Image (cartoon, rainbow, N blue to C red; front, side, top):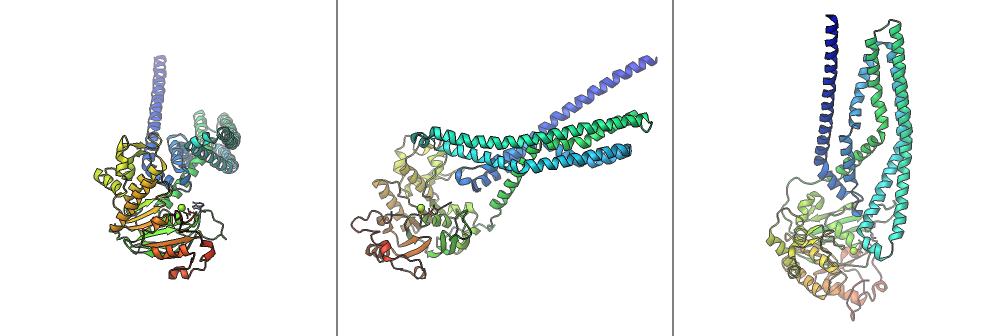
Length: 549
Ligand SMILES: Nc1ncnc2c1ncn2[C@@H]1O[C@H](COP(=O)(O)OP(=O)(O)O)[C@@H](O)[C@H]1O
Ligand SMILES: [Mg+2]
């Protein structure tokens, strides 16, 4: 009878083992399913924030989307096993205590093991941490360079730069690979060391356990239990060392994303929605330093103060590099002054939520960027459900409706990488329509005529005159006297300071005479007023085509 019972026992234990393994397998599937879900949810939750951070980050202007890559790094980590090793870590001390009750000697061996392995982990971090960051930065820089070359590849080809940039880029890429390889080599060494030490210790624990069993100090079952528990303590440390690179990279990615998010979302805004402004504009002691200026350097915009009445049209003139475009970007809140305030209707523009302020502003930057989408979407600023009549009204205000109707697909013309390539003039005029979308109270136009032909310029002039008669505040950066003359006042900027500011005719007259004397109080107080010689001939009455340059 007992043989049968034993046989049944064996059957049962095989069945239990198989069932146990099946449960383990299912749990493993569930784990990775949920890890993937968690990662996806994480991505969905942080995606827009990372996008915002990417588009606002320091490298954004160069097409750097590091925060989005960081988010991908974090997502990969969440979906990976490394996360679970981290979760195992806090249970280590618990198992260690358990081991103590099995046998103090086994506890002591494992504790020594933990100490050695933690030292290995710390050494690993010390050696690979910094070089890992460097390798990451190098790779990011290489990818950014590739993006820029790809975007401008026609120029690259036309200028015969292809083989040169292949060499240039290849060299950079090789450097980043070398840096990465160095990190991997170090990590491989420590990871191997850690694994060897762990296995040695586990074997030692087993040997000591066997000895204790022979010395009748514990049972064989306890020996196996002790071996398993000791493995539970040591394994997570070992696995963390092995996966350290991914963990460290995720940590850096997390740091970067959260820091940027704070920066992007930490801006102060009033919670109440302010009414549409009337359009008065004041700059109060505005100082702006270029990014990465040395402590001793002068600011680009030097304590600039002036005001513009609602409905007034101001032409901003001045030589190249005077800071005109920077001034425009400060006024529309694209960049923030180091000190001083830009006010619209008396309210600091920092108190506006950018999306709300933007609706009341029409801004045309000097280098017009249109976005991948249709012309209609570009004009309506990618609003989800714009009214067609508002798009058309904007185009009409910008005097570009007829031009757009002339295109084969009209407003539905797709532009960007997948679509039509527009000429500089077309881009500028569509950008103007975008500025006019929603009939904003304040228009800031940075050299809107730079790429226009005679017909385009006449259209621009009509658009500006319309805006002026509609009591819109217009700031118009231009080199063309004929256009500046259409404005109420002219502000002449030089070296980040006001040189002249007064009624258009007065300023033009003074410039024509070469008597570049201050017209207003604020300019009079300004010590950097140019001499008459400097500006003589800037505006030759016989050929009044350009004010400067
Ligand atoms: N983000 C920037 N980084 C470095 N230099 C800049 C940046 N923006 C502007 N500058 C520099 O500031 C100066 C003034 O630029 P800008 O405002 O465009 O002048 P303007 O429009 O009057 O020609 C230029 O010398 C330009 O190179
Ligand atoms: Mg400019």
